Image 1 (cartoon, rainbow, N blue to C red):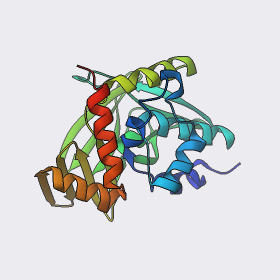
Image 2: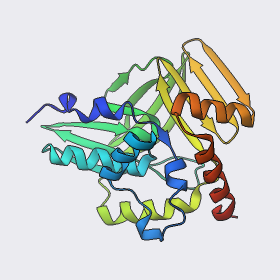
Image 3: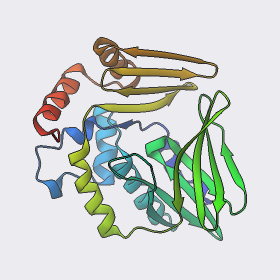
Length: 240
């Protein structure tokens, strides 16, 4: 069996963006049919340049690592002030546990160490997993020297049924197009008309519809017509 860092999945995953347009486009389906399986996600990425959100990407990680012989499972994060929970994956290799969180663009494993911290350097944003209490850990980001806590968690597997229930429910909580990825050491983040491009020591911010469309095309290779269709579906299905 390959070592976890040698799994081909992670070289593929780093090129798959976080985006919810592919999720919004499935709102016309019956709720139980909306989640995309890992094979559909990969074929959509190849054909339409789509990525996924935390659920579909975590599902891809878990299914792929399970096939490779690793134990992997979803975990719910404790994010304060959020209306809907966040989910990520934990994988086990021998006596070690690793965090993989495509929703935060952590697309390669970070080891979870008791009574210690682990840092993954990623150019514009670095990630820290820190043990803070008995059985409790914290994910932080470091941007230009500033630490920000993203969530806390316990290494507690979530059963497949609960994960699927939350996945289906999450379709009711989309209020805007969101996309993010790392490109050439830059962090690109788009939320509705807000655009942020962050590199080491520099940040650009815009709040313009035309900029959001331009950057969805430039950095995510998403067609303007697809973006328009997704926005129309959001207007129809957005939770009041």
